[in-house]
Length: 90
Image (spheres, rainbow, N blue to C red):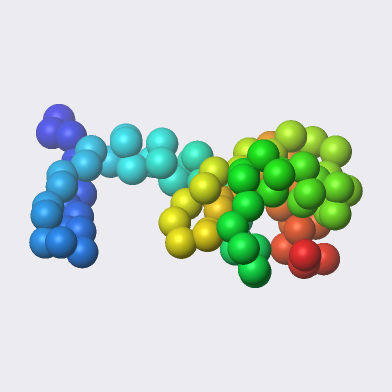
C-alpha cells in the first residue's frame, strides 16, 4: 500500500512533501498547546515558565518554546492545566 503524503507550499513558494504519519506526530505534539505573547519587552523563556506557573498556579509540568516575534508555544502535560489557562486567562 502506498504511503499517503501531503503537499505543503511555504510563504517563499518552497514546496515540501510530508508523509501523513509525520503530520500526525506533529499534530499530536501540539494537542495540549497554546500560543501566547507577553506584552511589553521580550523575556527569557525560563522566566516566562516560572512567572506563568506562579500566576496560573499550575502544578504539573509544561514546556515553553520561544516561537517568533515575541510569541511562545506553551505545551501542557495535562488537559486540565490547558483548560484552566484557557478559561481563566492570564
